[in-house]
Length: 450
Image 1 (cartoon, rainbow, N blue to C red):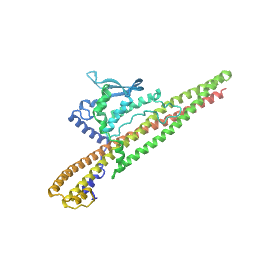
Image 2: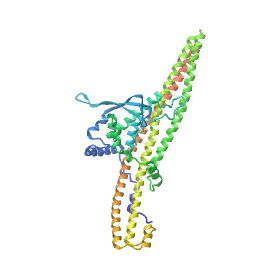
Image 3: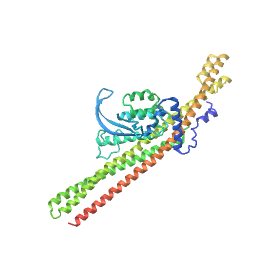
Image 4: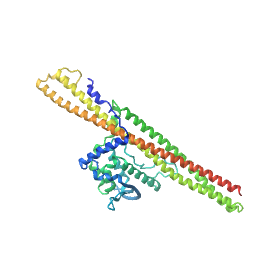
């Protein structure tokens, strides 16, 4: 088959990434364009109007979790957890609060919101939700998704998700997100009316694009490897942390036993009673402090898990780019095929085997009028295909530009958050070790005085 034309080959190349300057400046430019479009459209698909841009001026919290019983879609009784979302305005007009509202949402509604954001903002690294069921837990911790401690950690995670979306320069302006915070009834119907499910790409299509793209963009290939490495490193950290937590729990049990033994011993040995009782008290205090540290450890683990799930969000952006590149290549291939057919009809020579060529040989040549009619149809299809190819190429370049700006923003956020979390975790471990040294020093002094 004849090779594609030079113009087609040029359009098939991965979109060129032009210098973006500072990521925040680029994002502000994108936001400004979207805001202008929203003002022109009135509402638009998912975009908020100018009157709703004060969303960043409200406080958002998930203040409470409540266990409930109800009926599911199969009319079967189920137990689930509902979360109370509270929104409060930080600005006032004439002494009146602009917004004070609260409503209850299930975890599945948070999932619906995120799925919508993934479809309508494919170039954005959409913040992940906290885990639905506990993973990477140390063996003394419950993995039950109805466990009060787990529900509390998930409540904090859901609040963090909303704050991440609200602080994003583009996502915070989405109308569906605004309604999620303010409209309790019929919100699901409003989301479904956007038709986002129809725009969602099938997994089979995504898998097909992954293996059949001929000109993958090296930057997105490297980004996929980066996300895999991020997931691998954080998974390893979480497994190590779970083992450390198990050992800490063992220390907690040992010191708890020491405290009880010393207290009982002090009741028997009257002469050494005060010293033993004091030593037992120090052990009890240390055991209690380790218990608090283990609770704090779960908070740090959840911070790591957020970026474990962010790795999948990065891969989602890569998959969308692969799909766009695959569609571009298919359009270019189809255009090249039509140009070849048109050339063969015009010159009367067939350079490749085709069913049409065999039919012509068997049943005779076409009349000049028939050939002219076919050439005219092909020329129209070629013009249409060229416009479509240019449109897809422009769309791909715009996607790369916006996606890379958001990826840079994400990397800055990730470096800042993980640095803070790991430093706080190290400080906590150092503090625990210092407490242990102090406890044994105090116990030694107690024994030396007996």
